[in-house]
Image 1 (tube, rainbow, N blue to C red):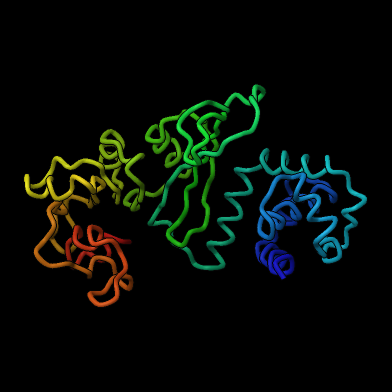
Image 2 (cartoon, rainbow, N blue to C red):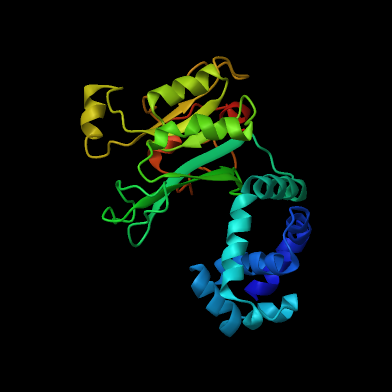
Length: 289
């Protein structure tokens, strides 16, 4: 079922034609498509994916390929080819998906994580020791970055050294994507450093971010937030159609829900209260494009 659905999805964006245009041979194209679908059905290493392809999946019959006769090395070479052409693949796939679904690029979501490697990984220059989000700081890490649109489709991915500072990667990623001015950039506290917020303002971007800063607001608010230090911040242009100039950092007397249309309501919203109350009303197009 997963195999058939994966192949159908690839047909909608003509992935096989894209890989062929990038110079991948027939066996490499089959191996690359099998590797991608294998990540959908049974996420694992290339070696485990090869066992899945040859022993537990009917994908070979759907592609009319005998994976049992294909050496494991072909799967590794397919992964190398996908990495080599990553920029072209991501750009063209997102373009085709945008055409299919009529996607807008006015909202950009950006986040990073890291993953660990067994062994020393001495041949990988990006493998560095740092704080592991999987609690494996004893292993060398690699940092993975994703830029997504508001619907969750990947626009671009990057890998960085395991000890990279998350906040130092934002400008590079937005410039590489040519994110349009006025777009809303959504990020977490690790990326929302003051210099990044300043850069976003200076370059005409809006942003929505979590902040660990509890210095704003009254002393009573600071005490109330002492055990919940993560606070919500939002930035809009100096002037908006509704006349708002700056979002208040203080919580209003009553929750406001109109700033996030079709998501929050006074009766059934599951959004965090701090998120629901820090946005001004009647800023629909300016706050969440």
